[in-house]
Length: 262
Ligand SMILES: C[S@@+](CC[C@H](N)C(=O)[O-])C[C@H]1O[C@@H](n2cnc3c(N)ncnc32)[C@H](O)[C@@H]1O
Image 1 (tube, rainbow, N blue to C red):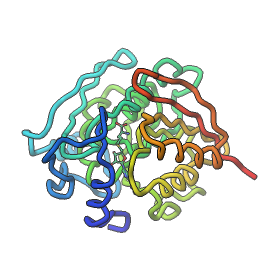
Image 2 (cartoon, rainbow, N blue to C red):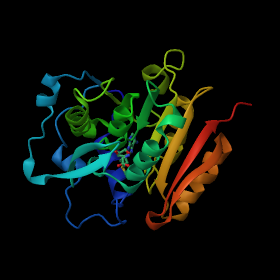
Image 3 (cartoon, protein in one colour):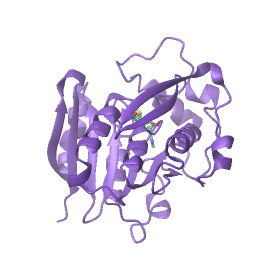
Image 4 (cartoon, protein in one colour):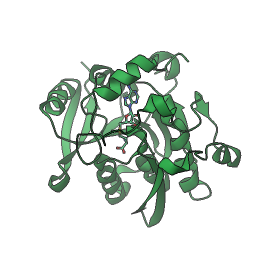
C-alpha cells in the first residue's frame, strides 16, 4: 500500500493528536485505530454500488452510534465510531455544511467538481453531493470503509452525482495519484484537518497541490491552540486568504484560500 502510514507513524499520529470534536482529551481507554483495525474497506478506489454498500456495513456494532443531521432539507444519518477520530463529525464539518447550504447558489455548486480532504465520516461530502456537486471524498485508508458506507447510505438515489471515495494520505504520492494534468477541482473542502498532529506541513503541501487556477479552497476549523494559528500564518503565505464566516460559540472559522501564483 504505497500511501499508507505505517502503524508506528499512525500510533505516533494518534498519540500526538489527543483531540475530540468537543475538546482535547480523548476518552480514557478509548481504543486506538491500529488496535481495532477500523471499519472494513480501504482499497485505493472504491466503486459506489449497492454491493459496496453491503460490503462496507460495519461489523463491530457495539462501538458504533448514529447521529442525525438536517441540511438542504434532507435528513442525513451518520454512522460514527469512537474508535477513530476520522469516524466522528467535528464542529468544523457542521459549520461548513451550514455555509454550503446557505451559499449554494452563489458558490454555484450544481455539477461543481469538489474534492474533500480528511473527509472523516463524510458529512461535508454528503451535503455537497445533495447540493448537486460531483464529489470525491478522501481520507486515510482506515476510515474509508465507514466513509463509503455513510456516503452511499445518504446519497444513493438522492443525488445527481454519486460521490466517489479515494485514499489520499497528505503529502504522499500526490502527483502519481492526483496528477495536476488530469485533475481540476472547482473546490477543495477541508474541515477540522488542523489540530495537534505531525503532518501539518504535508497537509499544506497537499492543499497547494490540489489547487489550480480557478480552484477555491474552503477550510473550516475549530481554533484551539497557538499551533492552529501558526498553521493559519503559513496558510496565508501560500493562499490569498479571506475569512468567510465565524461561529464564535464553537470557535470555528471558515476561510477561503486561492493559491498564490507568482
Ligand atoms: C479531526 S478529523 C475531521 C474529520 C471531518 N473532516 C470532520 O470535520 O468531521 C481529521 C481527519 O483527517 C484525517 N487525517 C488525519 N491525518 C491524515 C493524513 N496524514 N492524511 C490524510 N488524512 C488524514 C483523519 O483520518 C480524519 O478523518
